[in-house]
Amino acid sequence: MPRILFVKTSSLGDVVHHCPAVTDVVRQVPGAKIDWVVEEAFAGVAAMHRSVRRVIPVALRRWRASLWRPAMWHEFGAFRRTLGAERYDIVIDSQGLIKSALLARLARGERHGMDAQSAREPLAARLYDRRHAVPRSLHAVERNRRLTAAALGYALEGECDYGLSVEGEAELAPKGPYAVLLTMTSRADKLWPEARWTELARALAARGVRAVLPWGSAAERARCERLAATVEGARVPERMDIAQLARLMRGARGVVGVDTGRSHLAAALGVPAVGLYCGSAPALTRLYGSARARNLGAPGAPPAPAEVLDALEALG
View 1: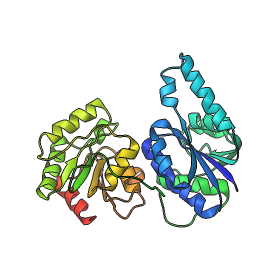
View 2 (view 1 turned 120 degrees about the horizontal axis):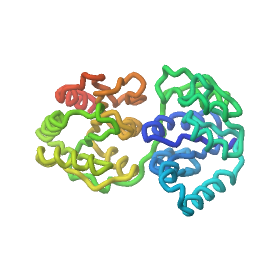
View 3 (view 1 turned 90 degrees about the vertical axis):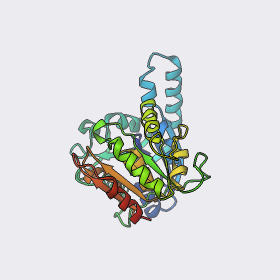
View 4 (view 1 turned 120 degrees about the vertical axis):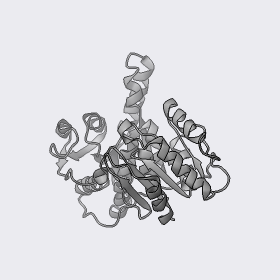
């Protein structure tokens, strides 16, 4: 049985976009044993994939802030021992960054990645044993699938399948119908105006659907609380981890979100999802691979609340 190690560490959207490549391996390589190196904050997504045998968390983001602490080097040593405990038939770095390529070098096995023309950081290609050309014009999901197929030598077939499975009930869901509104993103130009969120949430409330506004930082919580104060029945829950958020989204009537990894997770789970694009073009970062997802807007042309509501209702 072939042993395969994937290195796809971050960010949340990138990790979600790698899941269909894992599903492809299960289809094409019977009996494959699949492990995955991923940033600890996003390990919950890899753990949701029903075919991942072992998730190996890495903490590069946290370690960078504490290089002088002995505890950090102890953790790093434990990570190296875990990664080196098994020999893999193939190690695939689909991140295409120098940091991810260096992580792949720590693993035992033939290392595959994108060539210099395809990788996000061309120098990363020098660290692989085998390099593969993958068109930059493709959506990230298809780039991951193409690279994996080339590394393992099979023809890419079948539709995109994220392969995610969510167990348990949503602990922080309100009673009755609700919609999840994802207002947070890492770039200010990707934000949807607060007045439009308020209009959408009020329209949902008029239809008997409560708005739930998750958050990830203090600034995001403040925004969500401002919005909730303007809409009867709107709720700002406690901070959630990835698994809790996935359970919340799974039970929702729909999810509306800006260009953020959480929106891509909603699409991957197959729930009705509407992506709002205000400062980024949806061509290569759109919600992808789900018949229950819609993408609205463009840089400088954010969608109107009525348009969003119509799309959400059309998705059922």
